Image 1 (cartoon, each protein chain N blue to C red):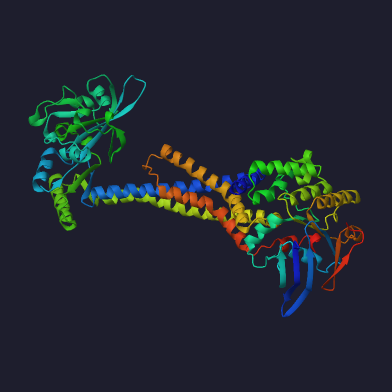
Image 2 (image 1 turned 90 degrees about the vertical axis):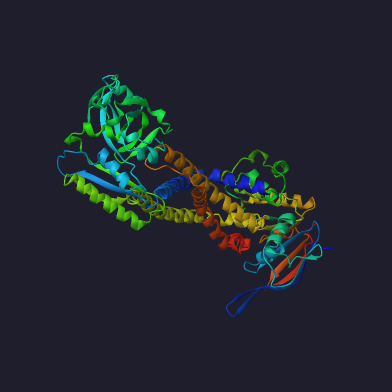
Length: 229
Length: 409
C-alpha cells in the first residue's frame, strides 16, 4: 500500500468570478521510504502541491489518502496533530524560532506531541548529535550559520520520527558547500527509511530522486530518474 | 503538553523580560491606583452605612455658639434636668469639652480633655450605665488626667485650670466633694473616644466629670462652641422629632436669651458631609484612575498584539510542527496575561497593605469583590491582546504566513 496517494487532485482559487486553476487531475503516489522530487518552473504550483501533500493546505477537489485512509475529512486541530505525528518539514528559510536555542527548537514538535520532558531532551540532543551540532545545542539561531540553522531544522523535522519529510528548496539559501552537506544529510536520513519529498529547482539534486515529478501547465508528469536509488 | 506550553511561555517571558517587566510595572501602578480608590470608596461607604444605621435619622444636633460673653453656660445642670422631664422619650448624650495642656517632666506637652458629661453620654457613647452621674460627685479619669489631678503632672494652660476640680475641688451639688476613679472603673472597654471637639483621643487622656461640677466653675471665657445631641426613641417619627427639636430650641432661647446662637441639623447630615466628601473624592479619583488605566490597558494590549504580530511566522511554524490553534492561543494567553496579571496582583497587594497602614481617617475594609475585580483588571490586557489575535488567527493556515516567505512562492 502506498504511503501517500493523491487521486484526481485539483487546486484552484477564486478570483472574483474567475477561477484560477493551479493544477488539475493530478495523481501521484509516494511509497514508504521513497525519495521523490518535484520540479517545475517558478509559479508552476509545486510548492502548493507540497503544502497539500504536507496537509498544510486542502484540495479543491480530488482525494488525498495516507496509508489508504482519506484525510480530507479531518478538522484543523486533527490535521495539526496528524502533521505533527507523521510529517516533518524543512523550509528554505529554515524557520527556526528565534527565541529558542537549537535544542529547544528541536524539542518543539515533541512538546506539541506531548512527549515527556526528559525523553524530549534526550532525543533532541541525540538528533543534534546526528546532524553534528551537539556542541551548539545552547546556541540561538542568530548565533548559527545558515548551514547550521538548516541542520537544526532537519533535526527538528525528524523529532517525532516522521514517515515523510517534506523539504522545500532546502539548499536554496545556502552556499554550495553547506548545500551539499545538507543534501547528503537528507539523503542519508532517507536511506535510513524516511520518505523524502523534495521540491527543488536544482535539476542535479532532483535527478538523485528515485522518482521525479515535473509540474507543468497544471499537469504532473512522472519521470523516473535513471540515477535514482 | 500543558507543562510544555507553560514552560515555553515562561521561557519566552524571560527572553523578553524587559518588555514584560515594563508591562508588569505599568499594571502594578494602574491596578494599585484603582484598588486604592475603590477600597477607599467602599470603606467610606460602609462606614457611612454603619453610622447611618446606628443613628437612623433619630439623632439631631443642636449647635450652640456664644454670641457675646455669657454669664451662664449654654446648658446647665438644672436646664438639662428640665429637658429630661419635658421630653421623657428623648436622650441628651452631650458633654462640655474643655482642654488642659500639661507636662509630665517639663520637656513634653500633652493635652487632656475634661468632659462634663450627661448620663446619657455615658449610656449612648460609652455604653456605660451610671444613672445620676451628671449630678453626682464621682468622676472617671484616665491615667494621664489622674496624674494631672493629683499633682504629679504640671498644667501649662488650657480652657480651664485643673485645680478647680481636683481632689480638693469644690462641692458638687448634693453629691458633696468630687472623688476621682480610674477610667477602667467605668467598664467601657474603649481605649479611644471621639467627640466633635476631639480627634479620636485615647481614654487615658480623658476625664469624665459630672455635669453638675461644671456650673460652679463657669466663667464667661469658658463659653465656646457646644453641641447638644438629641436622640429620640425608635418609636418617634420624623415630624414628632422636628416638633420636639423646635420646642427644645424655644426653651433654650427662653433660658439663655441672646447670649447664644443656635443651629440645627440631623446627625446624619454631619456624617453625610464628612463621609460624603471622602466618598466623592474616592469616586472621582476612581473614575480618573479608571480612565488612565483603560488607556494603559488599550496601550498594553496594542503593544502585546504588535509583539505577537511580529511572531506570526513563529506561530505558523509551530502550527506546521503540529501545534493546534488552541495550543497557540494558550501560549499567547499565558505569555501576554501572566506578566500583567502578576504585576496587577502585586500592585493590589502592596496597595492593600499600605492602605491599612497609612490611612487613618477611614477604617479600611478589604473587599473580596474589589480584590477579584483587581485581578480581573490585571488579566484584561493580556486576554484582550490574545483574544484579538486569536480572532485574527482563527483561520490561520501556516501556508498563508509562510507563503509570504520567498521560499514558499
